[in-house]
Image (cartoon, rainbow, N blue to C red; front, side, top):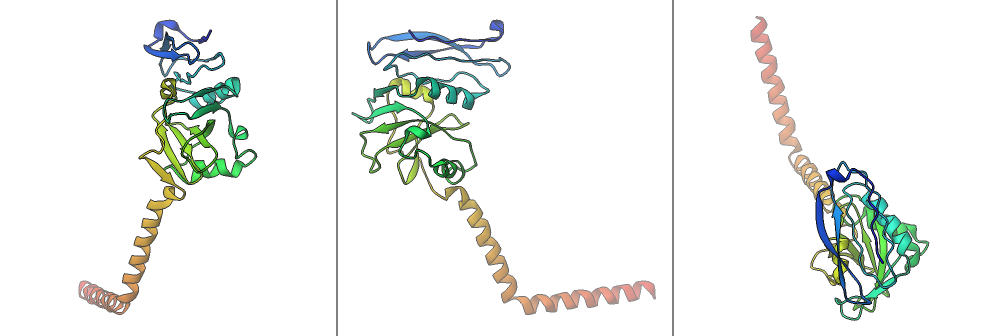
Length: 226
């Protein structure tokens, strides 16, 4: 039996409804969860084997919750409806083909998304059309789920809750390539180069104009003090 443990002032709860799914029985259990920025919430999910619900309900401490969730449910797996036949196994970086390669995690955090983020690996997906042996699933503070396929970072789910319905979108129309985080910086550098080139090409004219300006200023000061 799955359960949630809440700690915080119940009268402040802003209650919303979601579903827990069970691959084993196909039944849906309705659970009430809370969302409130001022509530100190500690969540504990003791999911039974083959349970497929990965969810988050705390506005604060999301990444800490995800880390604890992965640690508690490491090794549990279930078959996805989409992509058909794919299988998701919960785990962290050390449970992937990138075990011991913290530099890979660093690159996912630094070089793909528009801003630097802290990534938490949540599992791997196997038996997909991906040329790589595994799709590595991860999430960050935006709560979306991303999958690394050896080349690009794909946005495969809007949230961990989507995994309750046993599907991810891969390949995704929203992808990020290595170095994309710096594309705007490259444009800025290009503008700086164009500016330097413009100054160089018109150096003589610019210097002449500066001389004229200085000359006019000298004439103005002379007249002012005469």
